[in-house]
Image 1 (tube, one colour):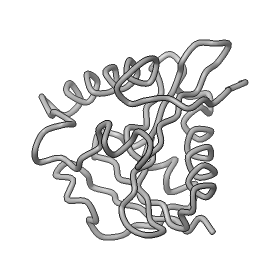
Image 2 (cartoon, helix red, strand yellow):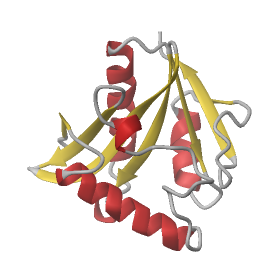
Image 3 (cartoon, one colour):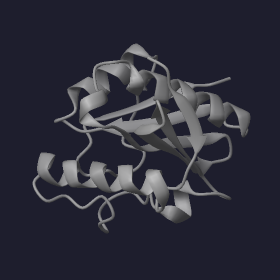
Image 4 (spheres, helix red, strand yellow):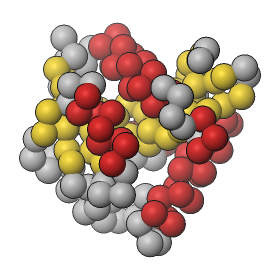
Length: 155
């Protein structure tokens, strides 16, 4: 596996296309759930694009295969959002590589703590997060479909 990470946008280009694919998959997985709905934690362009946030796209042989964003929560604390790997690339280590890349970028912009969440129909995500050292914490973002909220010290 060779992956190249590039800066992207959650609402344009390859990042925007991957985010749309992820949103469509989530709507099926969680029976009509809209990620940008009023009950969900905000994770759109204002939160995930510069200057306040960051969004990255991972490429294999020039083809976009994964994406994820960094959202500011508080001084020194961020949340990883919109993590996604295209179905045909799953099971090959891209999700773990994406998580490592997001952690490195978060450290580079001054975050010392990263948080994330996942729902009941995403056991593989939870396994990756826990095996990467994310410890269970309380519901920090009021995500109505999450069952796991995790935190990891980055520094």
